[in-house]
Length: 221
Image 1 (cartoon, helix red, strand yellow):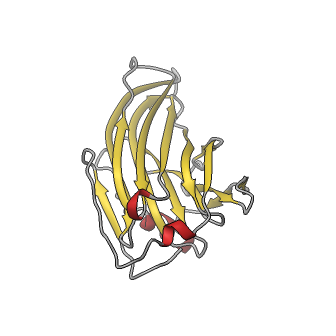
Image 2: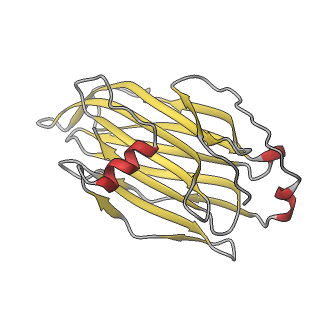
């Protein structure tokens, strides 16, 4: 899709708002083929001892979605640092561990067009196998400034009982390109259990171009 000087507009830990930039483009979106997708990805476990688990979902020319193999980015490597930095993420200010996930939509050359990131802090008691506290939360959403914009975001924190065996929190971002084209909505689903395991799964729906892909990653801080 046409690209211009691009940076990432990031929405940090705030309620829904609209960030819109209008570049000098024609109705190019009408000339681009679009695919309607609706899928829920499998769960990835954050590696024990650090690093990130990453998986890619690619939209094919026939609009099907191919799932790539899960890979591990080891903490301390340039690949891990690059991935985490791309989210604009920060370490939580809490002594409890943080269960992190990121869902990036990338174009055919790998430039990030939209992104969501969720860090769910939690405490746990492994002798009982129970999560003893949940929160605070850190989160953001971003959209490239070449016509992409954020329509809305929503954090759904854990509202169940504490202590509990496994808790889940969700963060959703909805985006579109110029004139509302290529609307899509993605959700980060973060799980944490009473033994300290952080797990996450993505879900995505909307309109996208063939060759585009989502990169999903889970890691613990």
